[in-house]
Image (cartoon, rainbow, N blue to C red; front, side, top):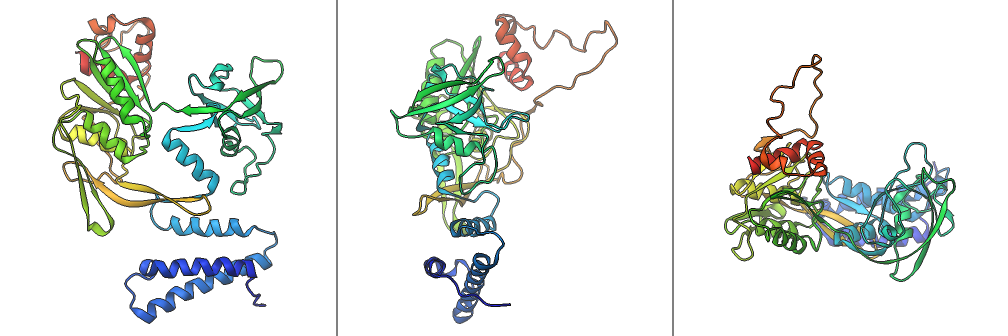
Length: 430
């Protein structure tokens, strides 16, 4: 087999790539002495260069060099741990925007087309956003953006899918004040409708509040830059009503910014350890402790979790559970005991890299284990078929308490449809 030379453009990139790895030093050949370490390092780089050259010159399809190099980085990061990842520029921009909670856009979240629909559909609409004011609803289909049919194959270099919500998210976002035209379909419409929306600064709420009599249900869906501040405002407002109790709902919360999770836990504690963070090799241990200032330590509360409660949200739940501040209700959590940092790369791409691990106040790790609730309640109750006329065991007792009876029909329905939320309400009102 012929041994093709590495093309000049490829060689240039490989030189920079190799120099970067050499500067990184022992990361690749950690622990190997002197010359042997260098031989192994450069031997691996030579194999990489040969492979890239052979693919560029011999593969049946012409593949972009950028795509190959991004694939190589993805594979390298994939060898580290399940939580580290590489993101292309478009993916990384969206990731940072979602974490920061603000961006220029129209207030739409898109998902894969439902059923056989060859276009993305609206998953959620931010209240008060341009999309909300235009009357868009979850389930609407977006069939075109600025005249480009969304059913066509996506042109983003990192994606091959026909329906690519990520790509259309990118098209919908942009500088505030600019216009974007979308074509929308809805099951009850006879034909698609065109809408022109003006992009504006969109603040994605991470804290929402619902009231059930004396119980305030406060849900945090992700820890973003504004989460701690928004939570403080929400709790302060709810506590203006006498005899208020709190349900802190962390179900479906994948985490987010670690420092904001620590701040949220600090709002409900006035002393003790919140979390211990152990860095590379266990050399450094940073301990985050609670403070007395601005703490809601007197309000009765419970914490609601599920199998998708992870990372920073597990830190909050574990801190409150270990301190005896609140009972945890639901099902065992995800079990993510590590901390990731965002590292920017020069071309706009980025790394999410595991940089430390954390321990609960009692010194335990949650990695692969999660938090065991004090009261286990499944998300759905099994339906039991009984003989005609037979009353269910305990019928009427759990829900016909005075606090429950005082709720309106919509509130009763919401609690009745959510066994975990209902149990949390009962725990605070019985």
